[in-house]
Amino acid sequence: MLGLACAIAATPVRSAAAASQDVPLTMAGITQATLGASQITPDGARCGLDPAHLVEAVRQPMLDAGFEPRDDAPGRVTLSAVTAQLPGGPQLPGGQCATAVLLGVYARESFFSAAAGWLRTGHVVLWQRSVMVVTPLGEHKAAVDDGARRLAVQMLASWQEQNAAGVAVAAGAAAQPPKPRP
Image (cartoon, rainbow, N blue to C red; front, side, top):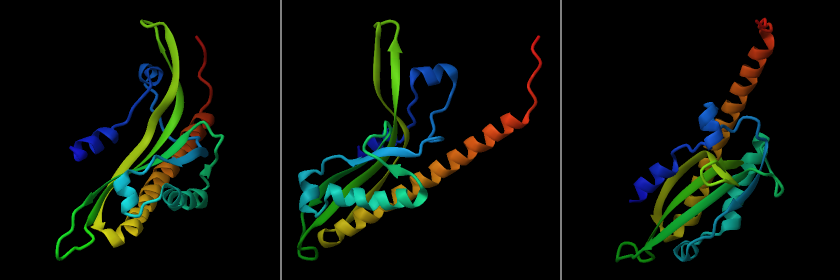
């Protein structure tokens, strides 16, 4: 069930406007985003997780790459950690912890429904990945921090690739002579 949820969560989402214009939603051009973490489950707290500490595991790689976390930015980078604490036994007295760590980048977009007659604004997924971490209780906090850091590195690699592609496309368009009008 968790695998299915992760697969669905990793599916790209596009706004109606982008789909109708066949414009892919990417991280190209984004240099700032609000960085935050969702609440930690009670099992996550018992396994030693702290949302502020998880945010710091992601913040530094973002800063190092030039992606600025800002509270007033319209885009969002959100870290979620859903944890289950598993009972221990004679070989594992403290038990185990299993955490699904999810990192996502979201852009603020507006949606119009002609049928319903409304305009709504919300966030759409630009990038999203997850990792599953299962460890003994005493090792869990460090392993989840490492998983969050690895997801940040993956996100930043995609961000850099998409921004480089955007620059190349813009440079190619600028280098072409204008097309004559009929």
